Image (tube, rainbow, N blue to C red):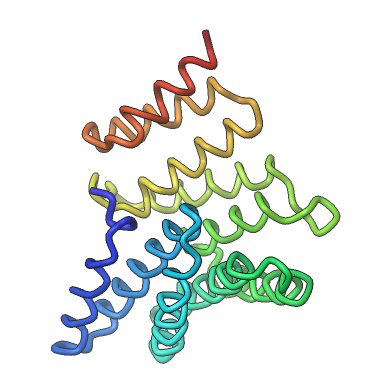
Length: 212
């Protein structure tokens, strides 16, 4: 279920892309790599993340050759700058303004892309207030990303990025002290994927304890 925690997934896709270099396979590979980097940085495995970031950067530039993935490419470029800041926080002074500029580019070309709104939300959630950071704005951006995921038809229950966005939204609401909102958000994830163990066995019980 948790594709973003599985490094081998990227390896499988890499082999598939070498055999059949289609744009959609490259995008899926980059997306899997993106999720895996997030997991590694979130679990403080910076040394393991470094080579994955290098591979991801190369794939993003390859993806730029496909106009149909323009919005996703620009969103990935925002994420890449964030990953590099995560690897070395001292570079935030230089990379932070670049990330904001890149986010503007992504929004110009991809207001209809959930991927772009996810990066907007991540940026708003983590940047300082003087630079435009706001948890409230981030929550709104996550809601827009989810709306775009759901627009025009049902989202497959197994779509890890959609589910991960729900989780990110719930965790943000927890940080804001909105435990009821977080609980409803985690229940939303379980309605889509009842076997989502992280939400079912950890996140939901923890937030329910905070409501007692």
